[in-house]
Length: 104
Image (cartoon, rainbow, N blue to C red; front, side, top):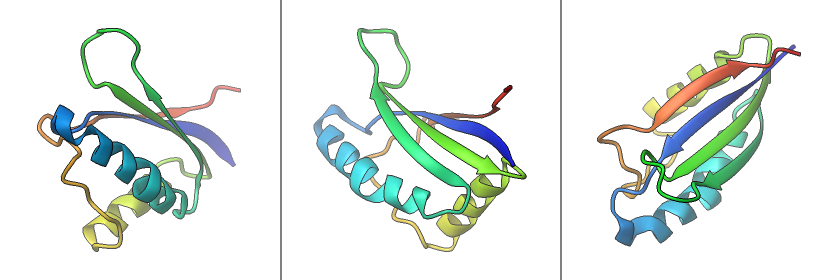
């Protein structure tokens, strides 16, 4: 089994909707994501200082023979309406994402 992380840099659509963004992320999105086989943990961070770019970072640990398979399943569930979208998540520009494989 391979191990890796999926990272997502995101921000709320407006500063006024930051509370709604965080509530959705913590109470809805993360539980739905962790229900997808292969996602084993999630941790969120908020940027310190003004470094530019999205204010929030989420790091999801993945364990799977094919590290991309959990992402494909998450996208399938999203397209099928099996996950809950949020109007508080900025989509233009979209979140910055990346999938990384552990080297150990």
